Image (cartoon, rainbow, N blue to C red; front, side, top):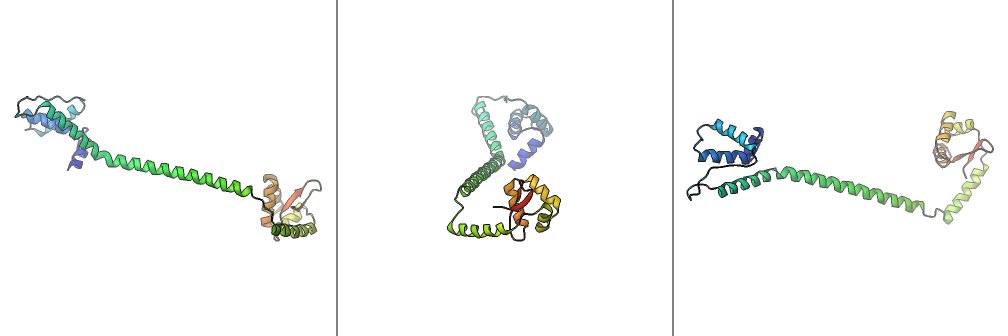
Length: 199
């Protein structure tokens, strides 16, 4: 009932606190016969920041301290009714912040791993042996023209030229190696004007 009452008061442009306070005032004035007057009075009084009531200080009637206590309690109840929305919003913002922090930490960790791998020595006895075999194999392969390399890689001449112009030399070697039937990487030798196996 309380939640419905708060919603109804909001729809009418007022608050539950102002509505109940106005009702108390009208009740003390014996003006509760016309409910429409209560609604109008409530709307008018909700715009006023201070609530004024007429009360006697006799023990049988509600005094100003009682009205203030009721007013404070109603404000607490009304704010408690809104807490779940605020808490869920705060909770969502906290989760988003946590996710942002986690993503940032993952990126930093990936950068450190990449730097570590890049700084590791890449040669071992086995690697040296394989490299010497690969080197002797590639030394036997003759340099190729752009047309011959395009045929070997299974692409057209324009693709070879475009990749050579747009990629750094090391990336071009990797690209050509991925296309080559034997897995040989190729590089452009400007002095002879031909493509040769990468060393």
